[in-house]
Image (cartoon, rainbow, N blue to C red; front, side, top):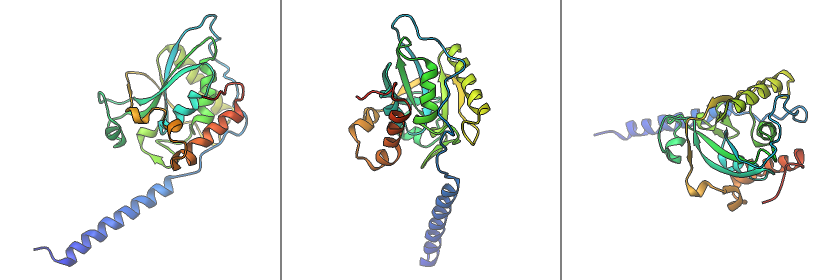
Length: 231
C-alpha cells in the first residue's frame, strides 16, 4: 500500500512540473512586434481584375477568431471562414488540432473579388493588423505549431507575390525581428466547427476577444481606412 508520503511526493512533483512549464512559457512570451512604419505597398502584386470574380487563399496567423474578424471587415472580401490547414490528418477536430500533433494550423479561408482588392492588399493587412509575423509557433498567449504564421497559396502567382512581399518587408526592416511566416501550397482546408464561425461577432464581450482581438479591428480601421467596412 502506498504511503501518504509517497503520494504527497508525487503530487509535489506534478505541481513543480506545472509551475516550471508555466515559467518556461512565460519566458518564451514576448510583447507583439509592431511595424516601424506604415506598411508599404507590395512592389510585386497582381493588378485589379477587369471583371468581378472570385479567388481564394488560406492564411494562418494564430487563433482564428480574430483573424477571421479582421478579414470580414475588408472591402472586396466575400467571406472568411475559420478552419484548419497544413496538417496530415483528414477532417481534424478542434480538440485534435489543439494538441499540436496533427500538423494543422488554425487558418482562415478568404474568398475575395480580385476586381475590388488585390492579393497584395490582403497581405498588407495580414502582415500588420491581423497578426504578428515575427512570432514563431505562437501568437500572444497561444503557443504551439497550430498557432504558426503561414500562407497556404493556391496559385503560383500567390506564391510569387507572398515571397516577394516577405523579402520586401525584411529588406526594409519594417519589423525589428525577422518575419517567420512560411509559404506553402495548400493541400486541403477543413472548415472548423460552427461555434468557431463569426466568434468575435457573436461574443464581443469574451475576455480573450476584448484583450487580443478587438485591438486588431481597431488597428485595421486606423491603418487601412479605405479598406475597412463594418459588418
